[in-house]
Amino acid sequence: MPLYQLSIDNRDGTVKQPVYVTVRRAVEEVDPEDAFAVRLEAEASKEQIEIVQAEDSSPAMRNVTARMILSFRTIGQDAFWLDTGVLNIP
Image (cartoon, rainbow, N blue to C red):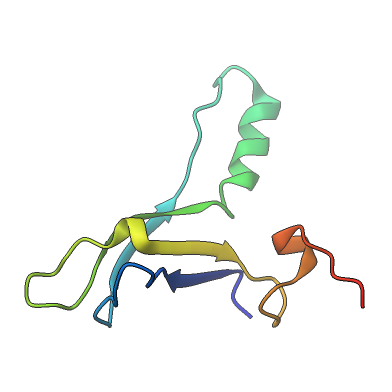
């Protein structure tokens, strides 16, 4: 099961698929003198990714980066409470 789910916000019209997406690890700057912070950031940055650019497959290859949604998906459900923060009690 993948850790992230990539989806498209189609509220403002359909995005022509496939969409070509570029992602990268999001690395925050830490004080290089603080050995603990450096080790902590090295581990944390392994899991943080961000969308850099996304283009649809229309002839003009429109930039649709703002319409891409990157979210956690740790369990095979659409809305797991640890990912969304919403707890539904039947």
